[in-house]
Length: 413
Image (tube, rainbow, N blue to C red; front, side, top):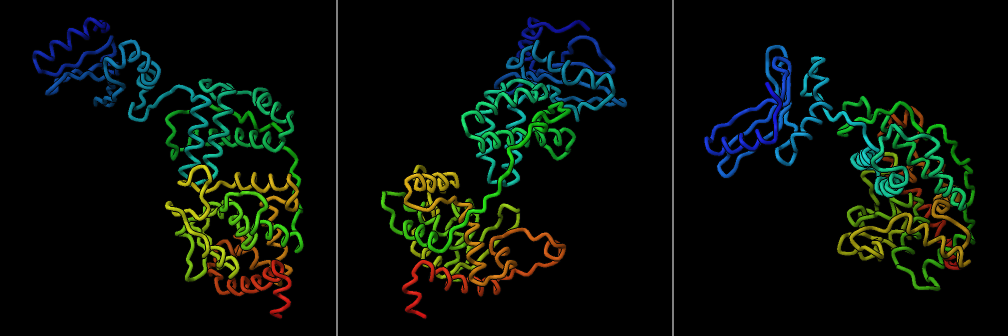
């Protein structure tokens, strides 16, 4: 059968419109195995024409839609058929399982990876998406991901490192490495919903060395703890109030910055004095009774109309981000009105001072939701430890009140 032409397609459309009978036109040879066809059908108000890949397999005919004419031209339909279906039909593979055979681009890889993070409930997906978008612009969004080389990634990271942002340089390297690592695993993952395959054979960021990790040992002693807490209660400069309240709650409970920053009114049980997270960084639910001094702070907070306890200053419909809280503390450090500290140091401070208050390491680990690695804890122990946590928090409440109000503590004793 001769190949289709644009003129033949236009004539066929008119004929179907007049006769109101559907027709199927084939493009070129291929009878008995498969070929490109166009199905033209009359509708009550118009005529529609769909491009189809047609296959004969085991004596049965199978069709799969490619596109619609004229939004997909004859030339484009031929290209898609040759690219995605012709070879599979010749090999006897079913066209039902054949997909887009184009190699995924850098943008495809990064979008699919951030989509995977989002669908998995990872809180870092938005920050990762923002970072990878900038990286894609530099590497080239429409380049095949498999063409990216380690040298190109180094060229992206080096300017960041040279300007002194070493931590950011390592974050960028981590974003790229994680995206390509996911891409390698997704190639043959039947659970993956990405429409493209990337043809990756190696991770171009895997051989790039990481920035040496230097663990921080910084924690606040009792005098520094008091100084910071007092400043947060009464800042010497105008500050968005949710910032100071969120940092104080971190100091009083020892919880992760992001989990405190994103607190919603539904997570605070004022009657039971419990904060509850359905999902946390380690993927497990977590609940803690808070010390009375923290309960007093939470009860004094009026959630905004969206239910956030610590809303963003720029967008009240969203909670304050943990990056904003880090920047807030960093600015006060530079002004030298508070001790040199980061929000993560505050979590370490709680761990240390709570130990000084007499709380066992096991109960401190449970309050801070640190994953316990022993087999008993991981596979068998399902006790909530809420009574033990309450007793520990009561003990911590007495201790921390003594730090914040030493004179009052002496009078009470």
